[in-house]
Length: 337
Ligand code: AHN
Ligand code: ZN
Image 1 (cartoon, rainbow, N blue to C red):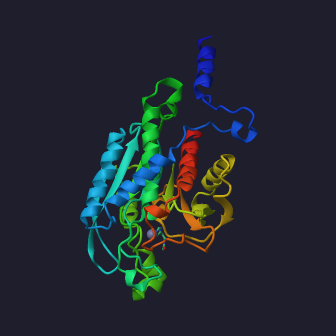
Image 2 (spheres, rainbow, N blue to C red):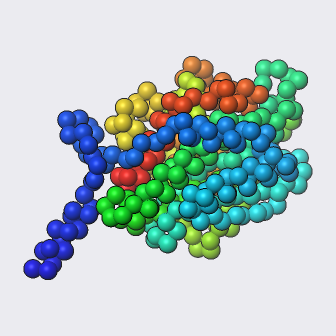
Image 3 (tube, rainbow, N blue to C red):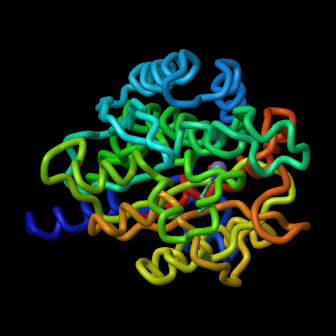
């Protein structure tokens, strides 16, 4: 008898609460996540930009790193800092800081949501040659990912504080690790002779995640899977199924895309595949954790967003609808884990 009651109790607890709209059959199978606030995420992006370009070895970089770490801490996350030394493509020594913010740190099941927080030291893709050596704000390229992650952490804090069934993370025994990579965007600039040498070029990107793949923030750390976000706040954005993600974690790609489609975001999440993109998710995969990349492409041009590696990658070109699309999709993925 006790066993029966226990089973019924378990079913009730495992059930999906707050799945409001019975009439929409596509949504019926999904647990409804809390609403992601794009205004709030936008403010986090603007705040990062207000420090100036987040280029390694600069005061703006260091202050913004503190801001990111402190904001996650204020939201109740446990923050780990990984400081390391590395070298740019030309041998320049740089100080890096990966920031890992753990929500529900004691839970056994870990999910990584990541993105880079540094910004590119050069606008080497700008149409104006005289801007090639100007560091960029990286509102979209870097800032948007962290903006979404901070807003997710704000929502998860409320979830952790709620009692009983509504506390999704606690109820399911899931912990989320928001990993903010440093030194992603310092790959060989286009004005350098080595840029077209694919092999030597590839290793100059993603220095923070390269370091983490070898040395975790906690010894022996692993996760169920990871989702890396990159350029997730621009105009005219579309997300193609990236080739490394399809190679390492195809079921996760399909799951995320199908959730996005159920939420009505099929204009953003395109089922076609794009090419192989060197990004931080590759390092997570090489470290043995399946990880996909949600990386913005330009809906109107071909390839990366129009503002990519130009001085126009600033707060004026951040689109709240794109932030909402990705943020809401990420929350819904977690709520349906
Ligand atoms: C390369 O261009 C090799 N990778 C793109 C990764 C990236 C740069 N994401 C944002 N900025
Ligand atoms: Zn970039």
